[in-house]
Every structure is written in structure tokens, then in C-alpha cells.
Image (cartoon, rainbow, N blue to C red; front, side, top):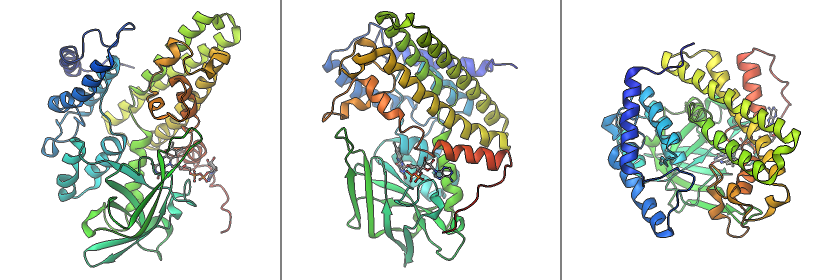
Length: 412
Ligand SMILES: Cc1cc2nc3c(=O)[nH]c(=O)nc-3n(C[C@H](O)[C@H](O)[C@H](O)COP(=O)(O)OP(=O)(O)OC[C@H]3O[C@@H](n4cnc5c(N)ncnc54)[C@H](O)[C@@H]3O)c2cc1C
């Protein structure tokens, strides 16, 4: 096995490193790096502009739609270098990483020209309208309908758990367009404007006071006939591409967040003496081993992408990685709570709890302030659910990859 990257990729790595060191504030990423609130504010305003000017947002998209036309390998190196430097990469989850790549794969030329540049420059915000009150895991049973009326689709129904629905300008929405067809064959994938009279968004308030999930009600809402992606009644295939993008995020960089978390846990355990407990040491060693496996599986995924392999092993790897990292992370956050002990409950449980990787959500928890570490613990509970539950990933591997008998269907 040769884990080395090509000389061209390494040359590109140097270019990115140079750009980062020229553009990031000096000392960025060091343990003792600090910014005043004013400096932080300025950085947050300027950084997306610098990224956009450098062409680093969605840089693998073709040039004609505003991307930089990077190869897959260059895109990987770019993500690795940003992760290594702890430089924020604007990744608007729904636009940059879900609907954008889906439009690139399935959209018409007109859709690409209309939507991709607006995703790139951040002028349109998106939400994902897949789940319904009775259609989550069994997504293909969805009932929201779309019926053609002249040059427009007329949409009726309800979605739920729509993250960011209250801020979104557009929704990529799964609708039933042929009620007579078998359930997987009568679905279409529409791009629907959210700011119109037929769309009502209600936030679902969670116990901590935040309301980032929404219920979305469509009552004779409309979108142009041409806003169907991948063809009428072909939405199931298109949706599966979106779900694959959702499950296959950041193959070779995803582990870094866990590596950083591990570092924080070791620091906290060393500080408060928990490191002397043999069980804590054992669990830390297990976590280390597991995220190394995640890293290596990321490289396997990259190899398959580069060689164009499309066998069942690739599907298995995507499903397996999603269940693997989400379950691993729940155990890891339980370990973090055991390391911090009763201190976990404090809003400030010490430096390690404050700079917890990936936990930006605390800023929105004003009604129920918690430390970033605790915020990450809460969110980890949802990680085995969103993007397809762990049980569903196991069904995919069992039925579609290993060829095990399908589970018995409960008569409706
Ligand atoms: C943080 C978060 C963000 C989300 N954001 C969005 C969003 O933006 N847009 C959107 O459309 N949806 C979103 N969702 C919804 C998410 O996709 C669904 O919650 C998920 O698909 C599960 O569906 P459900 O909640 O209806 O659970 P159900 O499907 O009712 O499942 C309940 C339980 O039964 C199990 N189960 C169900 N069927 C089977 C089976 N066949 N075999 C074995 N076990 C089974 C499940 O694994 C689960 O444990 C989000 C969810 C979360 C947690």
C-alpha cells in the first residue's frame, strides 16, 4: 500500500500553505493564540471575502459556474491544509455540500447557471425538505404532493425537522408527482422558493431554548416547472445522490476533529488527575484507535473515488463510515463527561471545555448556556439519526452489500 500523494498534489499543498500563511493572522492555530472581540469580528467579516477572492469556496466546481476547476485530489489537499491550519473553510452545509453537488451532477445547464453562482457567493440559503411526520427512515413513503398547473408546480403537504428552514431562501424538496407509481418511482426533486405566501415555517423549540429545526407547511405553494432536478419522477435517485454527499463528507479530514477532541480530553484528564484511572486510560486508547481506523477508511474512500471504483464496497464504506463515526463520537463524548466529572455541568469547566472542536452551537444556546464541550455532547446524541439512522445504515450494508435477506415488511 502506498499512502503517498503525487508530486503534483504536494506542489499544490505548498501553494495552499503559502496562501494560508499570507492570509491568516500571525500565530493562528497556536495554543496561546488570542484575539480581541473587535479583531475576531473583523476576521469573521473579512475571511469569507478572502476565501471567495482566493477561489477556495467550492473550488472543485467547474470554472464556468464560478468554481476553480480543481481536481478531486487538489480538493482533498485543499481541505487537508485548511484542516491542518485550523482555518475556517466556509462550508454552507446545505448549499456547498448537498444541493450544489447534486445540481452539478443532475441539473440542467440552465439550473447550473442559475443556482451554482448564487450558492458560491452565498447569496442564497438553502434547507433540505426530505423528512415528513410519518416518513423519516422510510423516506420513499413521503406524501407532500406537487401537481403541474401550466408552467408551475403546485405543492401541498408538510415537512419536519427542516434544519434552518426559517432562514432559507430555497428548499430542495422531495414531492410525490405520480401517486399511482410504485413509491420509489413517483417522486420528484424540486427547488422551491421559501419566501412566498404558500410556505409557512414554524420553529420547533428544543429544551435548551434553541429552535433550529422547523416544521414547514406547503399550501398551494408554487415553483417553476423547470425547477425539477434530474427529471420528473426521478427524484429518488437524485435524493440518493444528496444523501451520499451527506454521508460521505470530508473523507480524509473528518478524523481531525476527533483527533483534536482526543487531545483536549488527554489535557483535561492530565490536569485533573483522571488520567490515573486505568479505565479512563483504556477508553482513551480505544478512542485513539478508532479515529485512526476512521482516518484509514477515509484514505480507502479517496482511493476508490480516484480510481472510479463504483462497486458495492464503496456503498458499504459510505454507510459504514456514517454509523462508525457517529457511534464512536457518542462514546467519546460520554468519556469526556466522565473525565470532567461534576465539572461538566459548569458553563466554564476549564480551558479544555471551552475550545471544544466543532462546537460552535453554544452561541445560540442563550436560554440554556452550556460549555462548548457539553454542547458537543448534546449534539452527538443526534449524530446517529440525521443523514439516515445507524439502523438504516446497517440495513443498507446487510441487504444491498452483503445480500442478506430483506427484513420482513409490516403490512400497512
Ligand atoms: C440534527 C438533525 C437534523 C435534521 N435535519 C433534517 C433536515 O434538515 N431535513 C430533513 O428532511 N430531515 C432532517 N432530519 C431528520 C432525519 O433525517 C430523520 O430524523 C431520520 O431520517 C430518522 O427519521 P425519523 O426521525 O422519522 O425516525 P423513524 O424513521 O421514525 O425511526 C425511529 C427509530 O426506528 C428505527 N427504524 C426505522 N425504520 C427501521 C428499519 N427499517 N429497520 C431498523 N430500524 C428502523 C430508526 O433507526 C430509529 O431508531 C434531521 C434530524 C436530526 C436529528
